[in-house]
Picture 1 (cartoon, rainbow, N blue to C red):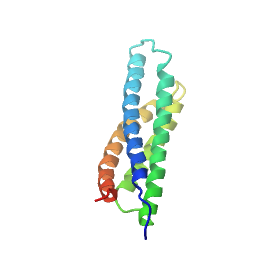
Picture 2 (cartoon, rainbow, N blue to C red):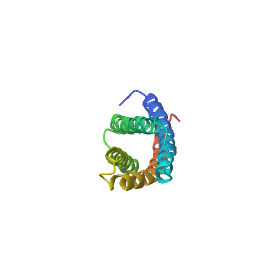
Picture 3 (tube, rainbow, N blue to C red):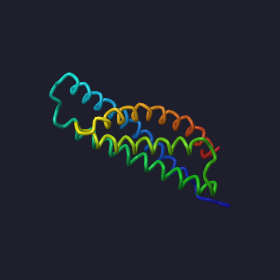
Picture 4 (cartoon, one colour):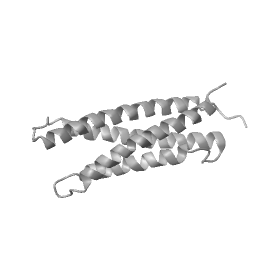
Length: 146
């Protein structure tokens, strides 16, 4: 079957993954800053939390975009899913991001469970991103023109 090239789709995925990792780094910096200010009783800048929330929303959107690109591209190229460990790794990352978003939005003095869940999820998310990067690299090699 002659299918159109999916190279443009993989370029969007590559940029989205790069921006997702950059967003993760920004979230780690702003989150650490908020945690430090909270524990040292320092006043934090008023812009810090809104920036953290906005970057988190962007990262969550990018990760969901990546899921869509992966499903559409794989179905378009192979006709079905499940050709590698990349799918379960990607689904795990999407799940971790959604748990992070959900728990992050619950953080308050009335919900003491939310902050440790948010932080531990984000540490685990780093391992998920590394796994997706490694498994994704092998996938990208299949699609590149030879």
